[in-house]
Length: 293
Length: 334
Image 1 (cartoon, rainbow over the protein chains, first blue to last red):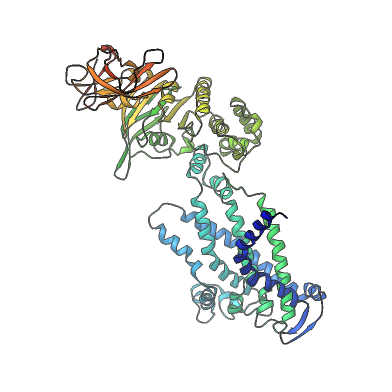
Image 2: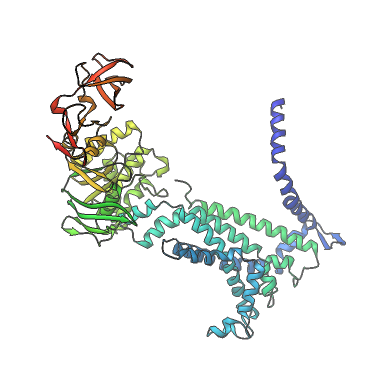
């Protein structure tokens, strides 16, 4: 390596150092530590080595399978519904009518609401004895034992909370993207003879492509990482009805809550699963997405 | 095809009057150029014809129909936008086909029509490309192909050449003229470029501040401008305007085009040459009179040219002088 080249590499490393240090401390080290701990069993003060075999054992365990299925179900409920609602509200609010700013503020407000606050709010709404929904809606499902305590409805109830919490994020991102679509395209398509639905499918959706891909990937990752709402609303129950991957790893009621090794192995497997899923999403959806002018 | 009639059309945006009581008849198969500076209301007129803006007052007729309450899609007007407004995610073929698809034309039929339109505009080799992979001129032709494929009654073109370089603009200008002859189409064409107005239009309508200043064949508008605005807007460099009494006795403004000014040394207006711009086939002389009036003269390059700092005497043949009312700016004689 020539002297000038060596100097360039040193300079590059120096410039990269701040982000490398941050990534190293908060991402790479914890990830490496999780991989390391994944080969042990027991608590932090009493670890015993079991080897790489543990990753396969966890992958093949019923608990991991059940949690993975619950997580996938949760993602399949929250991502498409959240996306459709977010895009729908953004399209409705993307008009120049008096007072629309108030609606935009309302629709985007959930982005400023923490998971804890949102969960407590919905916990009260879902309460079968004092909750507003039980009084206001004529459905038996909201009365005792309540949607959060019924195995058939608990996951849907938590999903409603998550969809509501994510709505502000989707709304803001899609609204910004909508405002960057040239008006000429809508005018041109109107003159070409396209009615509103055709304009939506032939102009709006394709022009939102990169944004929708981004939001889909982010919502999917959020769904797989959701923890707070499960911890506060259901504690993984009733039974295992809402024990997702993250709850299995961190939850107070989790079967493996006292085993650092099993928790770490599950976390690493979740990471790998999400990594593959994100690559598949990008590869699969990117072909349908148009970037640039 | 059909003619277009704007009957006392006014358009207001809040307190601003963009178009004021416009009365204009555009004949069937005519190529009418709406000419004027930025903000004069010409694009608003075009957008009202297309249905993208609603007139505040007045009626718009296309053929035998008053289209005020008719949606853009049902007016049978195709528009070519300044930005071309091509769908970036669709191929050239899909872009051209789109108006037919929107009208429910069967797939095979619209593919044939798109091919025909592409052939007219020399786009057959680019049908599978996306707009991003085309040059500015090719994109402009795709926009034209998309407009002609549905054979509309009226074409509305909003400065479609303004994004092209000078050479391509010249070529496309010629293509549009021949396309007009070939399609026998009614075209309403908006531009601020007087060369386009002079060369393309069968008639030119000059607008300023929302008001129609003059309408007529380009040469007639150039030769007999109706007022000082038209006189100075059409022609580059602009017509020189002499205050009353300077070039001739009387109380009128006297306008003389640069090419009609003479610098023979016996004229009534003494001036000094401050700048000589040689353009190859001609030269532009910027002169300043004793009263600090700046005047531009255009002289052929084979004539003897004064140098910067030389004293000259300006004159113009009587039949090349345009006289305008000092107060109203309107043409008064001949």
